[in-house]
Amino acid sequence: MQVSKTQVMAEKSYIYQAEWLVRNYLLADHLVACTSVLVGIYLWKMAYDVTHTISSLYYKGYASLTKIQRIEWNNRGMSSAHAIFITVTSVYSVFFSDLFSDHIEGLVIFRSSSLSIFTLGVSVGYFVSDLAMIFWLYPSLGGIEYVLHHLLSATAISYTMLSGEGQLYTYMVLISEATTPGINLRWFLGTAGMKKSSAYLVNGVMMFIAWLVARILLFIYLFYYIYLYYDQIRQMHTFGYLLTFLVPAALFIMNIMWFTKILRGLRKTLAKRQ
Image (cartoon, rainbow, N blue to C red; front, side, top):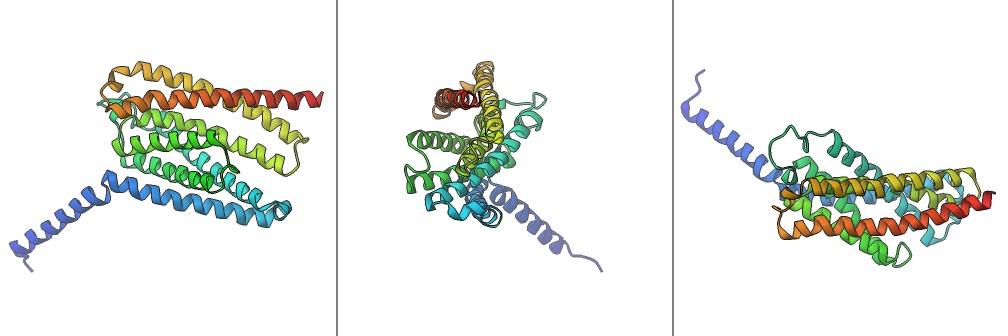
């Protein structure tokens, strides 16, 4: 049976329209960004609920915690889940993905993809969710330093997600979230009454090492990278240019302050062991 020329043209027209819809709507950067933030909020709410369910079933002391302690317990479970997710994806994006490879033509400072945008959006969803909880229970879940940290992070990630500028540096900064599970574990151990245990001591040592590597040395390497690609950074929009310098600098100062607290805490713990 022969197919008429009109039918062939109609089928091609439908295919073209479908391709246009996928390219300009379903895969449009702005839609990917909005969708990923909503997906992130849903996922981290799910992580909060899963932490509550697992803790209720497998940790007998969970029921004896106060209401605010249970909320913080679940919140830290959510925080750890995000930290693991964003650390793995950031390490992959920076060191193993072809997106920021030297073999690809074009300025590295302006490179992005649907996957990199979606990943950043999921992370924005976490910071929005956590900020909401911090404000709701302020200051039980963290003081002004946590608010400042989350606002800076959410602003910088949102900008690079929507503009496509500086995603390499954003992912490098997000690698520092690798320290979060250890910090949360320390709080879990302390809340569970295990401050005198060997696990608490080992956690303190590992947290010190992780913080030194991921939040001190990594940031120094980041500043070197900013210097290395400064000619490209100069071509960014003014807001993105300022964020590239101000946000890492502010976070680095906070990291130094927290690092001194970690060092004092580790010294105190080791002194009690002697």
